[in-house]
Image 1 (tube, rainbow, N blue to C red):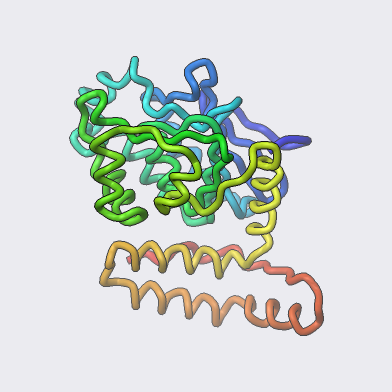
Image 2 (cartoon, rainbow, N blue to C red):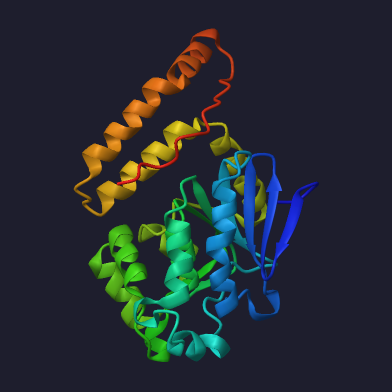
Length: 274
């Protein structure tokens, strides 16, 4: 996101806002935006702030410069793995950052150019929609450095691409192109490099015009269905009640019949708490 965006510095994660779209920028370009322990810990408080900001309707995650992220900073990886306070046996701060993004209530887009390697896939995979430049390169590389990928990252990869593809990517650590990643089901769309950021901007702006009630409800329901959550009927019932009291259907249907753009105003309730 460029132009007259408002910007707040948060350590090595930068939050920008342009209209209803906030962008989290992974900012460590000298190391291809590798994420150190401190950066992983910044995701949760930053996302908490964006979740409660009524002016934010969509979040884009991207890297500074020409790369999404090279993943966990190798120079900091042993500290991450052996930190007794991080719960490292379950991915520690890495998984906490991933889960903060995965459970964020509003729509999220991973805008991937350059390298998306190792732990960076946990960030991209935790987003709702992944769009990549055709020049992007992907690799999930724990087998190259003798670590076991966090359970949450493996589970999400299996749900997205299936066990056979997950085994291929995790056991080999091989790099693949954006076209190959799209063919394996990891991406929603691949865009030519020269049109990439315009496409991201247009897509995020369009998503921000949709009903927040609709998008947040269906995101939570889909996520619950994906993990076979027995509370799916309860979650769906909660959102049906929210819809009935919201006025959103009346506005949306009225706008459609009048051939005008809808003015959706629901911005409350939040996700179902089960």
